[in-house]
Image (spheres, rainbow, N blue to C red):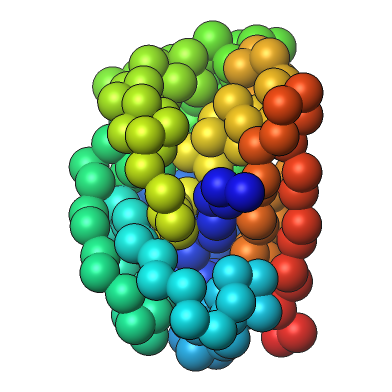
Length: 193
Ligand code: F6P
């Protein structure tokens, strides 16, 4: 059966600081995940399986994929949801500087578009070519970002996209999805770090 593998990047310096967006390096814990990822992939895909790795163009996904012994491809369409003027801020700073926006996002997270940035709805649209390419590829492992993974995950789990902003996609966990006739089988491989 055809599977797709998904992972968020390892913890970044921005994750540690609670900041949105950016193009930070991964933290030392994130590096630990990068070193463990090839083993998790072997556990999940089997010893000899050759995968192709898709990352975003941001450092944290490229650094996370570094030790995977496979061909790699960078996609701009896999970059994290653009938080516009809020890029680099913490949620507390967003609430303080843009209180109306903060409330509006809470009210309708799927449709809320950051000033100068994107909404989840925008992301779903820019992911269409990725999904099409995924549908006709085999053995793809995607290393990308929280919002992006939520949308890809919702698509394969047949969850309405409006619910993607609340999907649970933890750090340091490899997810294997195997689409079946009427549902998608899911196995999670959490890294022990
Ligand atoms: O905090 C990590 C992060 O990937 C941010 O860069 C991004 O803005 C956020 O998660 C997306 O999650 P949410 O839509 O829940 O704010």
